[in-house]
Image 1 (cartoon, one colour):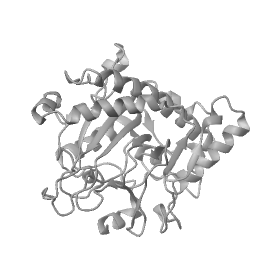
Image 2 (cartoon, rainbow, N blue to C red):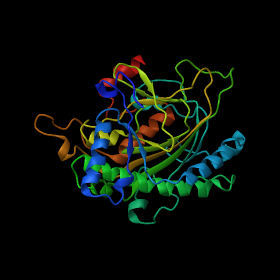
Image 3 (cartoon, rainbow, N blue to C red):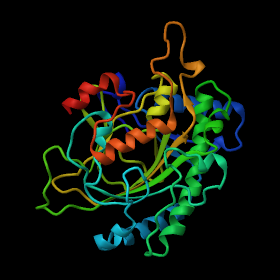
Length: 354
């Protein structure tokens, strides 16, 4: 997929397809070639597609069938697993309960989508996990029905965790670091699977001016791995304020960068503003499985030695992954502009114009 008027000031938006099948067991030269492809994508659009990823199609189709059943339950039934506090990133989120644009400082109406969120289902009972000050290891909130939802989600979750860790190994090689560099920041990482459900809206559905299915935002952490229905909706913003559609090729997963990786790399790689809009007046049904890998809550995020020099000093103050993530979630859930480090930079004016 490619377009014109690029993201991050480049001449074109490109979301290339990268085959990572030979990474598994590949020679150093083979892995370096894949890492170079990833580096080029991360320097430009901040998005790419992967094939040869090894994630079984059966895991996806089984989970999609279960979430269709769940989201068609009555609202009062789904709401039985709604979290009781904004700080708890678990369970069912009804239509209009979040507005992601607040996380980049833009005041918009609430988003038009439902979601169901889980984290690890088997959290170790040890000092590190018990000491969590940001509640990223809260227990999952499982509905009584459908009975197959829990096994389907946990099976997919476990598989995509492993894939996301592999992607981080590729990132490390692309950045001139030891392949296991990020592993030290992932041994008690915040890991979240969010199933987004965008039902087709009725022709007379009330839609407020400026309201989106998912408001313009950047992702918060290290990386996102996304499976989505092949229908229009996902769009990337370029530096001129133009939006560009992204639809994954059959069998491909979409991968994109988050704010923490932008800070780590000193904007060598930058998280990209994106949103989900309705196609036409009311849009089509759209389902997405968005997995977010955000790092250990106590990981110090500061400029990597391979991404700065005397003429390019660190641009961001150090932060911790947990503090950054907690503030972003607070903004989305409470419809409050947040006080986090700005990684949108010179794209903010384009976002305000869009």
